[in-house]
Length: 203
Image (cartoon, rainbow, N blue to C red; front, side):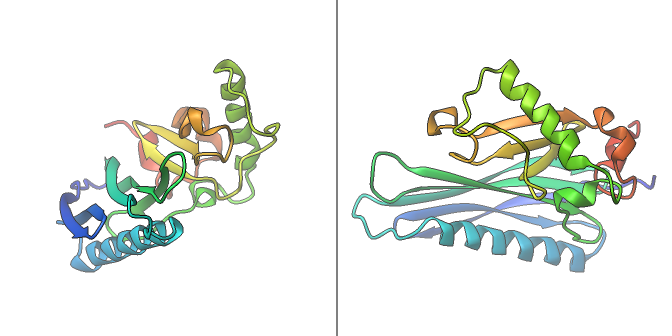
């Protein structure tokens, strides 16, 4: 596998009435076109999160946007964008959107793209989630049966981390529910040319 230099990640700050954002901006990749594609995708996702939160008309309303880089190696760039908003009511709401890219091209990946065509990745991952729910004594809002084919995920520490938004699986008090699965547990169905493939290789 060819050597890949990590992307340079800087934080762009943006402030508006009642809102402050820290937005990742990448550079130093294989091409400026790929960097631009990644940055444009990130900006679109940030805007979609903002739009999902609703109005800030309440005098007490506020919004904060921030991010965490999960993986930046082996031509894989995976991060989570967060948006917290208080728009009135008992408590604020935090949304999370994760993006995974091939750093050298700017290509983005959905969960299905990580696995070999025709593989039952939904069934495999759902089994790990079901076991995690039981082991951690999580009380779902409804009996858990399966993840969604496009379930939220990111890649970190040689693991695929699938997760659920607030209220998606369980009550607000549980927060985001994360289920990390070692790439080696999924090795037989991983698409070698996808972003999990490089995680199987030695450093």
